[in-house]
Image (cartoon, rainbow, N blue to C red; front, top):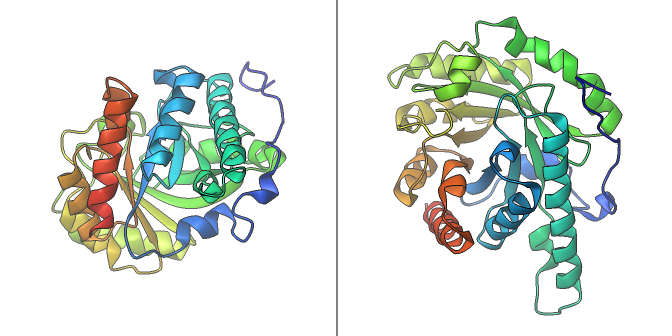
Length: 287
């Protein structure tokens, strides 16, 4: 039992068969000629089977990673059931593809990664976790407190940690409010560069610039460019990106990965979701 919830310690079968030559971190850090796309699925906003259906559509349309998380108060059991459903769906699709010479089985060998609101939202069914410090938080809880609570369980589960510096930019949304963040403003170019340098010096491999879920405005291009000057970091950008044009701006500014979540939640059906993600992926692969 943890935080009142019972989470079984179980790992998926066939872990060693997924991306056999790469850890999840190596996969994330590997350089590509174009920006890659992450679909964020909030387990609080649909049931596990719907989440699995949406994740499969996302991968079919070119998403290269699935994040599970987002809401600050989602319990372990809901996060776990969502991760498990997505993993099982991927495994079934991978097996079906392996039986068809014209199909690409490797399409389904992508990571399912926790993007947690805190130590209460973990699952042993995930491949990895964005193990984050909310660098511009004024609260010890989000600098190191939640991490200390979660680390022993992640070690026990065998979930790979992706060392991530997390910086919330204006408007910030709910994450900025809950995380007690001193928001980075669009003209804080030098400050963003200083955060990127600090992340590198701490040993983080990933820097995540976040505008907040459903934000009216995305992270400023100038802030992305400033962070991009620290070449040793893999740069993830999310929040407020709903259109191919917005995604293209972030990609051109230097993002290695683009995260979208709200456009998945707002899609009326799977066909609309398919069209939206294809358009986003096509836009960033052209840059």
